[in-house]
Length: 123
Image (cartoon, rainbow, N blue to C red):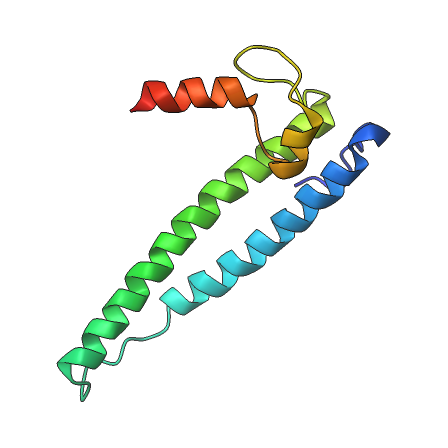
C-alpha cells in the first residue's frame, strides 16, 4: 500500500476508511496466525489426542490464513480501484454498483446480478 497515493473522491470517504480499517485488521490477524503456525509442535511426551488436536489447530490456522490472503487481495484491489477512480463500477457490466451493496460489501467488484451470474456459471 502506497501512503503517498492520491486519496479517492470525497464521496468515497466512508468506503476508503472502512476498507483501510479492514486491511489493517486482516494484516494483524494474518501476522498473528502466521506466527502461530510457526510455533513448535510438542511431539515428545504428548499423547495421541494432544498431537491430533495440535494438528487440527494447525490445519484450521492454515485455512484461516488462506481466507485472510483472499480477503486481503479483494480489499487491496478495492483500495486500488478507489485510487484509480474505478470504484463502484461493475467489472463485468460497467454498470454502477448500488450504494447499498457497496456499504454491505465495500470490496465488491460486481453488481449483485453479475455476481449471481458468475456464481451460477462456476457451479
